[in-house]
Image (cartoon, rainbow, N blue to C red; front, top):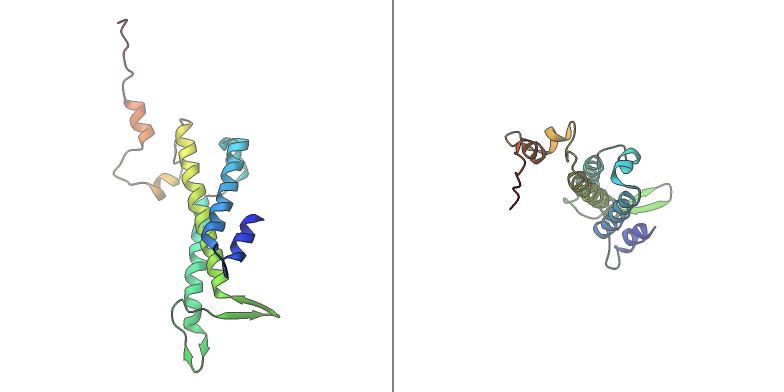
Length: 157
């Protein structure tokens, strides 16, 4: 609820999509800490980067809207603010852009903490298709490199 307040407040005062996204991401991360990240993986069933991708599409789409809406016999400029009217509801493109930013920030922040939480609990940080999406093909995962290292031999001295 606080994130929605920050999102809507950002048009006239400090705030907006970025800070609302951080507030939302913090609440999601706190949920992961409270229930444990293994349980959280069962609750959050999709890749957070998918949320970021949708947010990026919304933000880019919002930037492109003015190019296709004519005003004063000419088309608008990239990222020009427009008001959209749907069934008596007036929505500015800035709000749609901020919603896109909110989704990008939530997706990326949750993904980063998600990967760090997996890595610190001695599990593979990238599993399944994530290895092909987010890591370099020429590098070996850190976890695999650790498995091949010999254990340190401790002498009695």
